[in-house]
Amino acid sequence: MTAARLDTLTSWHADWKGLRVAVLGLSVTGFSVADTLAELGADVLVVTETADEEYARLLPVIGARLWTGPLDAVPDELSDFAPEVVIASPGFAPRHPLIVWAQDSDAALWGDIELAWRVRDKVLRADGMPADWILITGTNGKTTTTRLAATMLVSGGLRAAPVGNIGTPVLDAVRDPSGFDALVVELSSHQLWYLGLQQGPEPVSPHAAVCLNLADDHLEWHGSFEEYRAAKAHVYDLTRVACVYNKSDAATLAMVEDADVVEGARAIGFDLGVPGPSDLGVVDGILVDRAFLDDRRTSALELTTVAELAELGLAAPHMAANILAAAALARSLEVPVAAIREALRGFRLDPHRIEVVARHAGITWVDDSKATNPHAAASSLQAYPGAVWIVGGLLKGVDISDLVSSRGASAKAAIVIGADREAVVVAFARHAPGVPVFEVHAVETEEVMAQVVELAVGIARDGDVVLLAPAAASFDQFASYADRGRRFAAAVMERIGTGAGHQHDDVPPAGTPDSAS
Image 1 (cartoon, one colour):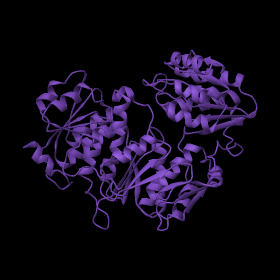
Image 2: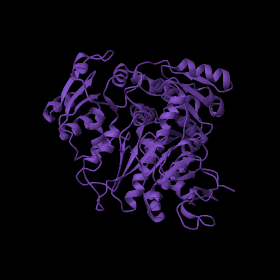
Image 3: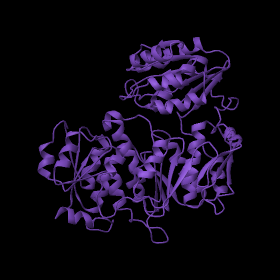
Image 4: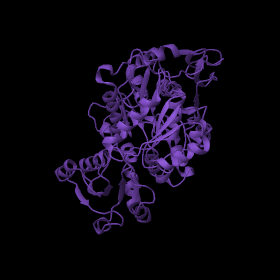
């Protein structure tokens, strides 16, 4: 009976009244789920360890109930509620007791993305259709590419918004009364794991999708690299028009080759080399599209140039790759190349992403605190070879040895911070013994970056770059990667004096991609 009813719940206008739904977690995503379901008339129980005071106050106002307490076992209140659907916030790992219980029960287990897809028809476009979805994932570059793609779509005259893991829940956009032509949805591997469970009659079927790259990350959540890869691969499931993949990352091509897509969907490659007739790439310093034009076997469309990107501070190799990926997604919705060029002229990176915070006495200080895993840090080190590298934090079960061997060996010095310092120091001793290594033993948040900067000042010389690219999560010593970056910038300015601050204009751009020959 429950499965049959759930199969009818594929529209905002279906009969959701009285459906018993347990919502696990009360972050911004969890609240958006509870708020949506309450508006639909479902019977909602929110279960969470702790609750933000404002959310806890609002839940009874919208008609939902709240239970808080330890979640190392299934609470009686949850089992007695006997939910027909359990919708989990992305933080709940597959082996969490509540997730195991939900999968063993008669309840359906969803993530917020499946719910959003089911009710996406609340506000329709002028043609009577729901907004198209573009899905973006990858170990690194997701947020930047999501913002780029949304900016390009808007520049092309579409009503579009970046949503999902980027910060705005998809459900908030679905319920926006102004409506959208397209939603650019950033998806974490956690959200994609839940998406892989969907069994409804109308599963998520995006217009276009991309996995930007794949490297070790979140292994403690998924349990293994194989499970992490399998989750990421769900981004391509039932793609209708364009499966965009990274030609420099064989794993992403394999995902596309293995994906169950809608007949007629095209594989579109991107990288910094010469593009084939269904690719985007770089020719003689020009970023070009050879995928979305009629005469793609003999012609290409110019998107922008490496020189133009350098003037905008967007020419680091991984940034150029992100731009090509975003352009492929936008072109799949027929955004003109002129609109893409215009979007790039006004685009600015978010803070803490290869952000130059100061230049003083010939030393450039760069904040890439968003580099929270080795793959991201490798891109930073490629952009700034020979830097004084600030590295360390919580490694999340990832081995940093390959990064130290491949990129760290060319660093001028390493300043090691964080709870997992020993693993980093050992990696340097084994794989880059010629690089001087300095440990920051401070554990108090207020002291860490002051010591980092003091050490860096003693190491760096005229022409050097001091690069914060930790290759690790921040939660051992900081509230977030943004907090880590802000404290780094503040310590730099405190040490060199605010009068020297934020001199962006005279800072040379990060390394640019090689022109294809």
